[in-house]
Image 1 (cartoon, rainbow, N blue to C red):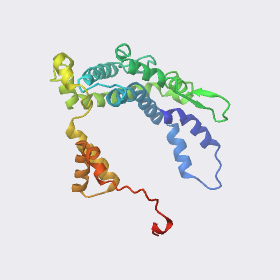
Image 2 (cartoon, helix red, strand yellow):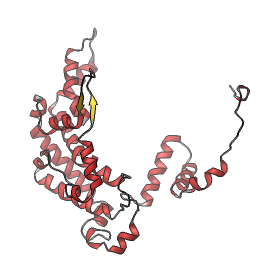
Image 3 (cartoon, rainbow, N blue to C red):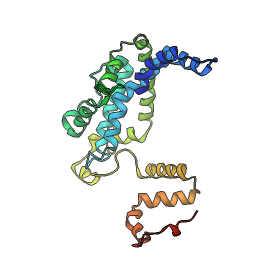
Image 4 (cartoon, rainbow, N blue to C red):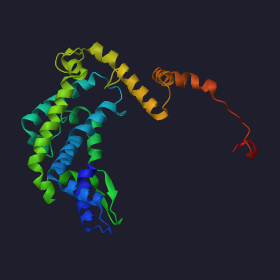
Amino acid sequence: MATYNDRPMLVEFLKIAYFSDAMKLRDYLLVMLGSNEIVATTRGRAIIHDKYSDSYQFLSASKKLEGWSCLDMAQVAGMLRVALLAGIANPATWLDEAYDPFTALLTTVPEYAKHKADHLKIEARSVDNQESLNVTEIIRAELYRPTDPSNVRSTARTLEHLKAFMTGMLRTLTNSTVATRHIDNGDIGVRMQTAEMVRLFKGTWRNANHIEGFFGTLKYFGGIFRASSHHTNAVASALLDHIFPTLAHQFIVESSKRKGIDDVSG
């Protein structure tokens, strides 16, 4: 969203920026940022972030939703599919500023309602530090009610990009275990859930099974430390099996004596 919002200012800066020698990068950026295709792409992605990514991240990962489980994500996955189908049939649906794919949760999940309300109140100081500006309100206004000429011209192409994005998102959703297990008659879908299931699943991981979580953790540690596979495997397993909190204190060396300068090497 920041890229979309800042683009007109970057274009104006590049137009007046002076370089003593030819600057191919400046010329390239000026052409690229003024391209209707690029404007439509950034606008479409910003709309998807505003209506889907931010909300889905909160619902699938926020610690504020205490007690939520993978069963709760069934209704979220169902709402997402409905929203994607509606957007593919009529992309203009997602150009409606008031449209929220998860609007039903605003009345049933107070934490989500508060998250959305707080998000709309985000403020930042102006460049001259003279006033406080509502960042979300300003960006969303230009996103759904653009005034910049290039942003206005991008609307038709933005609708095409939105349809393409959502078609890919729907394909990914329906070809994954999220759809087969969470939607309609899936084994943990809303229609199949019982009171006993809700009680037993309470607090389980919402958006990934244990194997997916393990390999994600494995790749994370491997990317940071570039260690051998058996080392990263041990670390990931210990972390997910909660071994660190249980055993770590046994290997912490503590000393009441403050080390002096002579103890420092190098």
